[in-house]
Length: 173
Length: 116
View: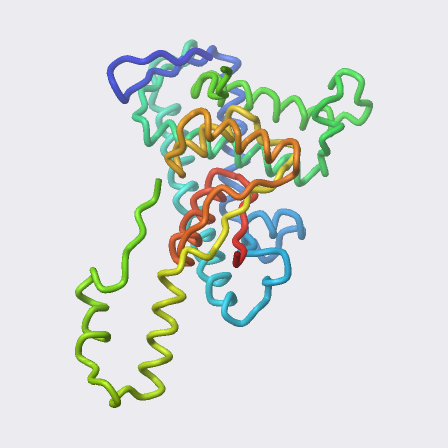
């Protein structure tokens, strides 16, 4: 994947054929997740989508219940918005005359949304598989469980896509 | 970073304070005043918690985008999350804090709200 600025506030993303194929599979799974009823999801995924407004003794207080409801509602709206974005990306791919490389031009807002969407998938895979810090630091080749190894590789590849798009951010004096 | 709205500078709220005459205030007015005071107090902390998946550079980017932090502050808060498990990234009014929590969560960060 390559990300190049084409003018202030606009970028061109180029995916090789296999990268584009992988991305479309990821988006299809993500779209499915955005459509699922959060109430029927496993607890970890439900918690991710519903959100918690507070910790440290104030959670569940009456005056925060309203805020919690607002957050849950906003999270549901966010999933609907992200589903529409996924559908747009998939439509772009279907309509593309050339898919190797597949090139897409995006604005700053679209770049943020796309990074957040890819990060959603990373978080969901990690929650589904119960990925820990140790798993993330381990060599994926040494993980015997196939689903876990595939999940970690997917998290890593999507992380690479995000970093290519956003570039290095950490301040180094 | 974030501009607070001061009581008395918004026309919608000014009426509550300026139109009430001394000695004519009723309990509901006091409630309203207390609620307004609470609403304008920057006594709510937005906390970001560590997790095993979010990338350091991504977290810095989100802090810069959502909280309008400069690179140095965003990096400092990211390291605090990474090393200490959490960081207070903003102290704001309740309404503003709720909005920040929602935006941070929209980027996949584990953010919560606490009364300071």
